[in-house]
Length: 429
Length: 116
Image (cartoon, rainbow over all chains, first blue to last red; front, side):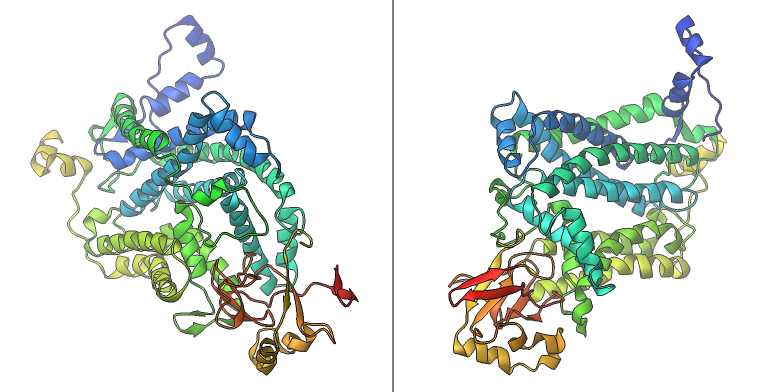
């Protein structure tokens, strides 16, 4: 992949002048025009491009919003309303940014599940995959920081609850957690000081994200794309140049995605948010029901599954620490998937048992999302505990064990055989 | 408000105090330090002063207004993640690791307290 030779020929004198000094055009041509992509990619492979679009949209709208937003506990809430009502097209820019975060997460979750189904995390794509996990983490941090900026009730209490997660470290060393929390807050409680620093970091992190995304794409272009068969490209006829084949397919995927995006922006801009965030932050009133944004719900359910006891096992004062560890662990475990999965077959298409495990896992994530939005009482807690176990079982039990006991179905010998059937592939050969 | 956090002050009934004193402190996470008489000032045992912040993740527990849910132990109930506190503000059920904090305070006069 990375070794393929460049077919770039600058035609103008201007092009030649640059090519001898800084061959950016040559690199772009090799990586994004002539780059060989598997001929059998399906539409799930368009989400990389869609995610790039999401990041770009968030950056552009965010920079414009920051021109009108007034950080500070007395001004933030009102400046948001000012943007919606008084700034020209402010409503549109704010809606794109707010809905955009949800769209970003829809796309990234589809992208991740695609990777899990087709075994894209396996060798030689481990670094590519881990960079992706880091991108997810930075995205989550950025989304969380951004959610505080409107300074509504949900903003305020989400910050309170999430920053307090660090106080769980008190169990390890008395005062450590509380110290960290007060350092994060810049005081004894969440206040305008906290808002100020969160705004600063919310502006910083997307650029960090851009850097990691570049590494992610770099790693992708070294090892090449996986494909639905999970078999590497063996001969040139199994690949097509990225442009116009993959680019036009990506563009089509993007337009379909933009339709959904626009539907929310113009018709349901607040559907994915919470009405309580239109009440200004009040440190004396906790909303009756605190829920995070939908994209954090499964992780929130895992956090709350650890009450005084877990499936009948008493946890005592460790409950809080274990909940926090499990929540962060649920993302960290993704990074170990390349080594936890023992099967040599990549794609779940050819793994009859693993396919079941995968769909059970997908259902588990949806169920945890549902439970995360429910109050932490009664039967909901029990179900959250059961699904938390299932969540981790996918990585820690299904991945290592199924690879050893499962008999994969017959693999095609090549991508060409999978696409054209054995006869045509042999002819082409 | 004290240090940006709400403060709960409850004038407890005799029944509430008795209920709080009957509990065996050995069963509480705080142990002997959780005894009810260590959480109030002498001669003002009816007044319980607490920082109104759940020790789990910092929500404000319910129980201050008449018609709030007060949890299974008649004290406070945190709606965020379901921690129940008793009439001495001690954690009895749920994910919170510690009792509600008692801030440093003193009675300046019979009707006035100074916190901090």
